[in-house]
Length: 366
Image (cartoon, one colour):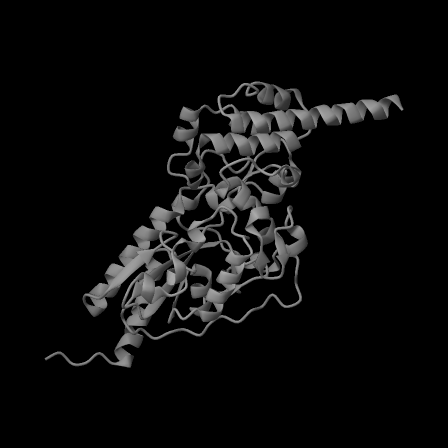
């Protein structure tokens, strides 16, 4: 008969698991019980206000998102893992944002899609746990199921949820991906992270569209990441000009966060910049055919929005850019685009340039 597994045994397993996680490229792991009562209420209140917009999946699964044992029966612990993604070799984010002829793409999306890499490495970590403890009930997640990953990571000691609603780590800032392993093993849990935003509120005014409506409160319907990635239809006109040249996601609230002076460069090769997407010209991207879009962005997180929304987003950025022959030619080339969605945004962009030209002519004639 096998001897019963003791708390000391599981503590040793925890230490070995952390060591193996480092060999797999994870920058930190932590363990929590998955008890998220307060976070469940916060989520329900957020949903009740409609601030999730078209993201119906946020409410589709009921309490499974905030109750791990309902998503995977038997779950006793949640292992949260963190992996840095900051592409240190990329052009300066601030410099790209300042040049309206260039396209800004959120730094997390400059390399390969993180989902497969995170899931693969999490599975290897779970396999190692099995080798240490024997067969057990578990499942790995990386944006692949209804999981409150930031709250779980906070409770696992990996960081605190900042006023911009992103997770922040004292030793690594906020440029990292999260993933989870739900398990029925009674592993020792870590202390939740304490908050260290203090009186700082730099992220609130930094948001171009005012999506951070109050500390720790995000109206996703105004968030540029939502508008450029999740929203299916037309981008609301009042939010187009504030988008500037951001065509996929937005990093502004993180760029001003003082804790990101501790951000660490990605060690994972998959997160390095591909196809010079760190500072591409808007007009060049707008000329991509559907086939070019598919070829250039295969394996990228960007690919999932499709060619039509890609063009929609770029059309808005072109409308916000200074008027140049290159910009006007790019827009004119898609004035009769097969997509009504693209045509509408192109028409808006051309109207912006025409209005600025009239205003400039009026000033010169005054």
